[in-house]
Image (tube, rainbow, N blue to C red; front, side, top):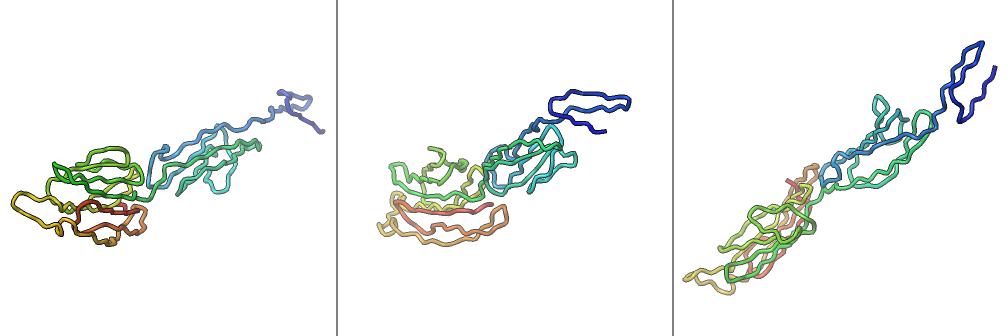
Length: 228
């Protein structure tokens, strides 16, 4: 005996032998997409999870859960793509995946000095938004200032929003107190540049160039990729 069932048939029963036919599944799976970083800046890999309302078939490059209701994949860089998922009956849905916020490089930092009546105003400008360094005043997301009233030579650590760090060198040498004198030559010495090894949180070694020595006016310390 042969039965033919077509789309749109409701439950039917046949006798004298009893056959019960379930309606055909023609509905595509519903889904939600979640990201381990919720789209926020991070210097770590991001895991994407697709959760469906019914068991799914396997998708190449993704890990299917034991109950078949979710697929996961880890991304090491930002990426936008479409993933096709299918239920047990072969109904498919196209899932847009958009991984954002991954940043594993530290910012580039520029340092400038400006002599004022109150001291030397040092300005740092960065290639991307950063966290406010201790003791510095925020002008914008990428610009910060600090007033020095004494000659200083120090390193500052600048963190971007993902937590990557860059070391920048600040030198103030043009401040002369009464009776101390100080020649123009002392106030306008150049800067040397040296490379310091550093290690990022992902385990890769990078180099950072920082300015050293005494100078007045302005100096630039450019560095990228140093993570502490």
